Amino acid sequence: MAFQTGLEGKPWYFGLIAGLVVAGILYFGAHRVLLEPKKNNIASLDNRLTELQAKIQEGRAAQQQLPRFREEVRQLELELDKLLRILPARRNTPELMRRIRTLTEQGDFDLLRFTPGVFIEQDFYSEWPIAINLEGTYHNLAMFFERVSRFSRIINIEDLSVSALRNPDSDRTISASFKAKTFVYRDDEQEEAAP
Figure 1 (cartoon, rainbow, N blue to C red):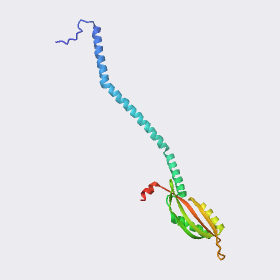
Figure 2: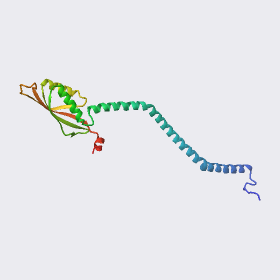
Figure 3: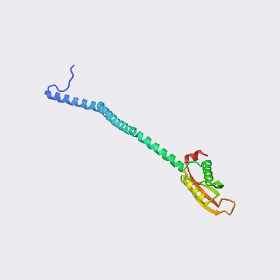
Figure 4: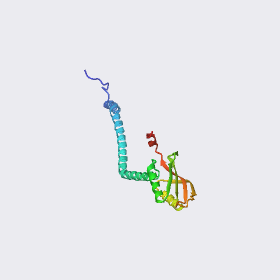
C-alpha cells in the first residue's frame, strides 16, 4: 500500500509548494518551541553578564580609591582626636583639678574652693560648671586666666567676683571667686551603656 498525498497527477510545482509549506510550518514550530526560549535565555544571561561586568568595574574603581579613603579616614580620626581634646567625652575631674592646682601653685595662689557642679545638658554636649575661689594678687589672677586660656580643652570663666583683702601681714591682695565652665561631649552610645 502506497502513501497517498493527493498530489498525484498534478504538476510538480504543487509538490514543491506543499513541501515548502510543510517545511515552513516545521521551521516556525521548531523555532517557536526550541530556539526562541534559548534566545531569550541567552539574552537574559547577556544582560546579567553586562550587570556583573559593571559591578566588577565599580569594584575595581573603589579598589583604586581605597588608599585615598583610608587616608581620609586617618585624617578624620586625627581631627576627631583633636576635637575630643577640646571637647572631651568624659569629665576627667582628677586631671582637671591637678592642672588647676598646678596653675594656682605657679601663680602663687591659695586655692580655697574647687567644687564641681551639676551637668547642664545641651544638644550634643553638657556644660560642667566648677566653682573656684582663690586668693592671690591681681597680676597673678590675670596670669592664671591667661594660662587657663591655653588649655587644650575649652574652659570659660563666668561670674567673676574680685574683692580686696585687708590683711597687711599677707602678700595676698585679692580674693577671686568665679565659675570655670567646661564642656563634655555627650556620646549617646556611652550614655546608653552607662546605666
